Length: 285
Image (tube, rainbow, N blue to C red; front, side, top):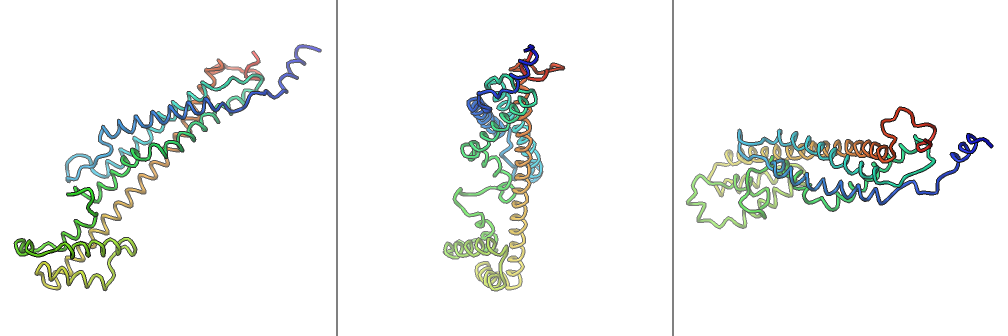
């Protein structure tokens, strides 16, 4: 039997080594998660989690959304590429495997490292990532709050019940009325996106009684504040949608970067990367 026949028969034998090196996958995933956490902290330090509450000063909400989205993409590319490269470079060597199969397995290792890092990161890194994402939505609806436990509707209700005679208002016990209005606004805008006619008429009467405005002026104030609430909520919703799209795009790019880096890392490990001809098998040299 000729040497060529022996080599051909050996190529048909499936290696007994497993096709997935989970140790390499987990190592790449751990490195990717750690680097993601580092880049999240670095992004927060650069101000990607802060929106200026003052018009014409600092970073606007639009700039914040675009800047944060681009930073998500860069972060996903860097962390996923490093994790994928390690998964490909550290995996177990396969002998007697066709070059195309080796490249597929390397790509799969990178993808698996990205998948494990994404699932694990969703659980462990949810808090810092949520802080970075939530900065845009909160920045579009609030300038600053007097208390961390106050309701987002408190500011709108304060605007409704503001009197033209502050000294007279200070003598009144407004806590019960204010709490009632906050609950009414919160429930109405959460369920129906606005006040129904009955609630609107009631709110106008309360505003008129509390502030001394005429019924017509009170109704106008209620309409103005309701429109402002709708506009702010809609802006926050659009901001959350845009950031979700940016995050989804960064995940797709991260998966591609991890797979490509793993294929390069595996090729460098086996010494086949950059060669013009691999032969019939990856290690038949």
